Length: 339
Image (cartoon, rainbow, N blue to C red; front, top):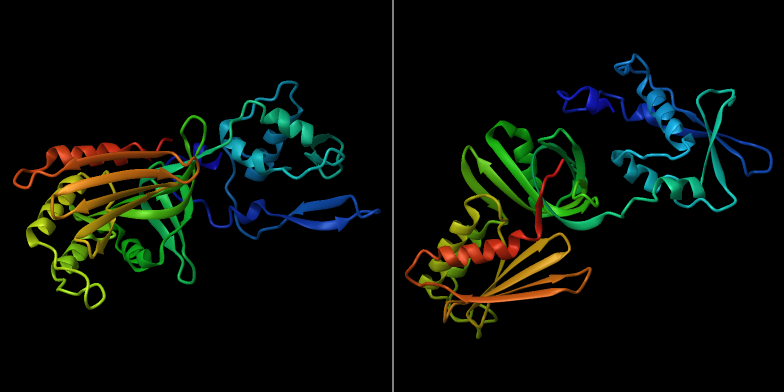
């Protein structure tokens, strides 16, 4: 509601979230009737366009919805109502009122909740690619808050190796354009509901592409490996030409900034594995350096669905076809922001 009336404001006013807190203040006779009151916040809160308090406006709007003969639930309230009263028993109910005297009571129970959600489909898991800016990065945990281009704020976890880079981006945000890719929840009409985990990031640092994880550093490490690198006996050096072919392919694939960089792993059989984690889907490609072949497969951890594709690289060409095949194979698992 606040964002719809203030489209130019990226951040919520200080104290806005705290003004919506409810505290348990009384337990009536029989230990079955509980009373909640709103927490008092000593800050100046904005008013709605109609001049009312946002908490009261939200309360009254919700009460209007649940008392309607055929309630129509706005889609932005669906994730809230799905959680609200989820554990109510058939014999339990919540009595809601617009005033302290409870002269008008609106009953919310299990049956009412199911009616409100009758046309709702549960969210689906997927992978989101989001253009955003960093609002804050926790020092003590792996929590991050990002702000999308639409102004929507989302909190998500990040892998520990990205913490310092994310903090750097936050401090010098004017230098960076950031895309995050991660595990997300989507509504039935493909609207982003939440971002649970950041899995890859793509950065344009003053126009120059940076990707994390960094494939350039890993390929340089592979290029420098010597005989016996694996365990002192196994592990032959990689052909430098094979490494350079893979480097050119990844540069071509990643430069547009729409596909995240893979995690790279070397194997003593003269193979390199490329791995992408895209929501609940794992994409794994094996690069056989000796014969310039790629074997790729995807595996959905939710459905066990698997897809496979194989192709050869052109050792002397630009590998446009190979890059297009990989982009198409990976791209179908990534959804851009839909607001």
